[in-house]
Amino acid sequence: MGRAGLEKDPHQVADMFDDVAPAYDKANFFISFGQDRRWRRHSVRALQLTPGQKVLDVAAGTGVSTQAIAKTGAWAVAADFSLGMLKAGARRGLPRVAADAMRLPFADASFDAVTISFGLRNVQDPEVALAEFARVTRPGGQLLVCEVSRPRFALFRWGHRVHLRHVLPFLAKRFSSNPEAYTYLGESTEAWMDQRTLARAIADNGWSAVAWRSLTFGVVAMHHAIRTEPAPDSAQAAAQARNGVVPNLSAAQEASFDTP
Ligand SMILES: C[S@@+](CC[C@H](N)C(=O)[O-])C[C@H]1O[C@@H](n2cnc3c(N)ncnc32)[C@H](O)[C@@H]1O
Image (cartoon, rainbow, N blue to C red; front, side, top):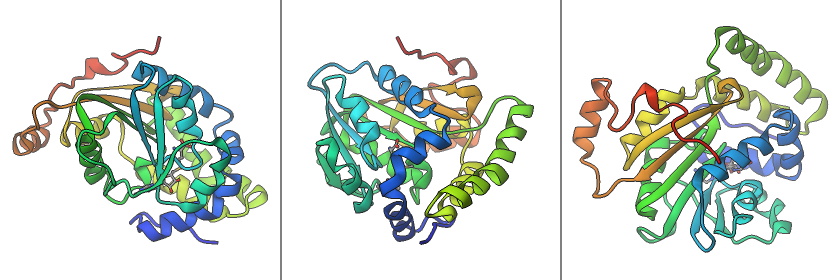
């Protein structure tokens, strides 16, 4: 039984998820206090998909996130590099592909939307992955990232940190077959980008109209964006980011997209 480190070595990450795969869905529900269903509902609604649209769900794991998308009538394919996770999700009967988020086996502009939930944080180079998502999305198509984030209020941030550092490892030691994986969960959550930083990374890698919405006081955030058309001038975007200016993004854009 192993765990990944913060360098996110792809072999270690895949091995770790292989280990937790059989119990993943239940553990997820337990760790999130049942909130994961609500977060998924919001993510799917934010996309406003129409039946028949093609959606790639990257880092789909057991396909719990893909299933929520498929329920809309869209055609959703689950991609993940942990064969254990894909196997654990076989019973869902969804199309599944073994694939690395940083090197997707799809042609340019193949999808109407790309989604990734609780996966981007585990990818070795999230910016490479975001650019790869842009490559496989048609111009005008959508991106939805649902990921852990930074709680907005100081007291809540403190409580969240105590939960990640002490409560979660304690519970994992008692109830999980791979407690170390939950230590990684806490560490990778604390080291992850806040809402604004992730928005900037998205805007720098082929996406425009980036907006985000915090859920559960910012424990989780959904980021939505549109595939830039034409291809972005990355040098200009990088210069703007260095100066603290994010194209198409302002503080006012938090919560600017809503779920019907
Ligand atoms: C926490 S699970 C999320 C599963 C699912 N999306 C959900 O919402 O429950 C993270 C998943 O990301 C996958 N993953 C991490 N890095 C990846 C990469 N570079 N390429 C493909 N999958 C990756 C892991 O194998 C794991 O299944």
